[in-house]
Structure formats: C-alpha cells, structure tokens
Length: 406
Ligand code: EZ4
Ligand code: CO
Image (cartoon, rainbow, N blue to C red):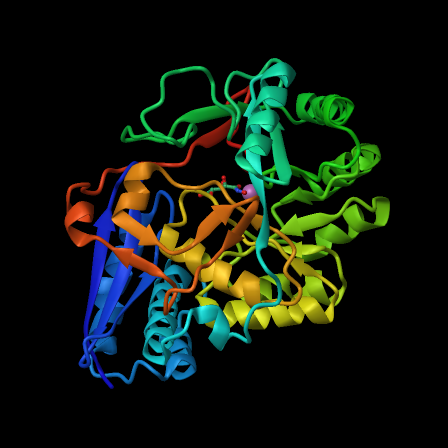
C-alpha cells in the first residue's frame, strides 16, 4: 500500500482546527489532528511545505519508521510546531492501519484495560457561589471529578473564568481580535484565595468528590511549594502545572514540602521534557496530549516510562484539541494499564457536526467506540462552511503591566 494524497484542512466551527487527511492507493483514509491553539497556520505551513511532499509514495504501514524519518530527518528536533505536525501524520497512519485491520485502534494497542474512562469537567465562577453552581452543573452532566477555578478578588479577568462580558465563542478567554486579550494577575492574592475556595467546595460537596486545580504555570518553585502545602487539607486529586517546569529539577522543592499529587505536561512535546520528573518521581500524572506530543507512537513510550515510575496518565482534553486528537487519546487511555483520568470539555454542536465521532460520554464514562480506526470522520463540506479566523490565547500581565507566565 502507498500514500497517494495528504491534505491539510483548516476549519473554524467556533474555533480553529487543523486536520491532516491521508489517502492511500487502496482508497483507505486516515485523519490526524495538528491544532496548535493561536499558532495554527505555522503548523499548516510546516505540513504543507515540508511534510506532505515527503509522504507521497510511502508505505502507510511503516508508522515507527515514518515517525523517526520526520523527527530525526529534520535535524531541528522538538518544539510544538514540529511535534504537532508529526503527531498529525502519526495519528493518520494509525487510523489507516486500524481501518485496514477492521479494528478500533485500542485493539491494536493491546485491547481494553477497563470498561470506560473516568473524566473530569471544568467548573468555574467569578466567585465562590457561582463556582458551586458550576460544580453542580458538571456533576449533573455525569462527570465524577471536577476541576475548580475561580476569579481572584481584586483581579479583573482571570484565565478560564468568564468575566461576564459577552463572548463570541464557547471559549471564554479567547480573543478573535487581531491581538490577544490581556488578563491580569497578582500571585499573592491568588495564594491567599485558593485555600478558601477549596474549603468552600469541600464544605458543600463533602470529602469524597475528586477535585482538581490548574495553576497554569504561574508560580515560582517556592510559591508552588507553599500552595501545594496550603491546599493539602483539601485532598486534591491533582494540582496542575504549578510551575512552568522548563526547569524540571525545580519540582524537587515542591515535592519536598508537600504530598499534594502533581500533574504536569500539557505544553511538553517530547519524552525528554519528563526525564528528571519521571526518574525522580517528582510528578504523579503525565498530562501530554497526542496532538502536541508527536502522536500515538511517542505517547505509548511516555505511558510505559511513566508506569515504570508508578506515575499515571491524565491526557490534556481542552476544546482546542479537535475530536480527532481527543479520539486518539481515548484509544490510548482505554488500553493503558496506568490510565488515571481524562480531561473532557466536550465540543460545540457545530464542531461535532464537522467531526462525526464514534466516541461517547455516557453514564459518566468516555469510550472511544467500536468503529474501525480512531472512529472520526471529517465532513469536508461542513468544514468548508467555517473558514479560518485568527484567534489567540490571552496574555497575562501583573497589575503594574509586567508580562507574567501563564
Ligand atoms: O490552557 O488548552 O488544562 N487545560 C488547560 C487549557 C489550556 C489550553 C491552551 O490551548 O490548561 O485551558
Ligand atoms: Co491546564
């Protein structure tokens, strides 16, 4: 079998998604997600200019070899643009292979290790009462665990928490202007506020509900250690991205001061980003997504490396990963013994109409479905009705105007 066509399709049913569609001489097609939020067109160019011409004529069954060819062959390794592009090729090839086998992808990855995938949903509110309502809404949808985020007193606009302004899409922090929205930040106010939020949520929902909280990389190691320690009484399922973690060894300080479980990795793009963290067991969950980590091929290696260190998985599942990327992750989740939890935000009706998927969320559990391949079909006619629109993640500034990590 040979690859005869590879096309990049950009569609914006509420937000931008980049999809690679590979076609073989036998008419089998495969899809891969290459969406990089706010930098979509860079990946489109990488694929169209530098990857698609290399794919034509290759044997689609040689997935490992193609991955190594694109990764090592470029000389310039790693980075989110490169790894999103390679991920799209890798997932499309796994999709082709599983379709040829007539099996859902998870069967090729070892078969199901469980009946379904536990999820967590996002609860947020400008203040605590609004947050508590949002937690109730997530529980009513079937989520069995909830990530809790709130506004911080004194701050105007915090990432992931709606400001009350009218919003153009489902993503409350996304700007569709030429420039990103500017949000504000005050670390001291945040560190004071978070324990009071968790205390209120525990008082309302009791000790058993698994709770998560995302720090969005905003703290220094010392501040992160303080937060991890101060939230210990509220028994988090995990504390996410408490530091930027480019400096992996910095997590030692957090670990020394707290038993709060730590999750990291949504912006990592290779296994090397985890080396110290896993070798020294400095985290409890790996958060990478198939779409930003180079595909199924390296994610399997990451999951096994994590398992050796008694670390579990918690794949990133925001709205800005397309249903193609979500589906790929669900097949891995179902097969991996060390699955932990799956983040699940869901997509808009328009997105689900463009990307028809076999995966389901029922009775509080996700399942990738039994369709051969990854189980997603792209309706190209529907996609064409939603052309690309520039959109950016926000930028975060301190009260005095200094640009801050986020
Ligand atoms: O900021 O997906 O855990 N989820 C998150 C997300 C990320 C966005 C970035 O594109 O932190 O909201
Ligand atoms: Co996050």
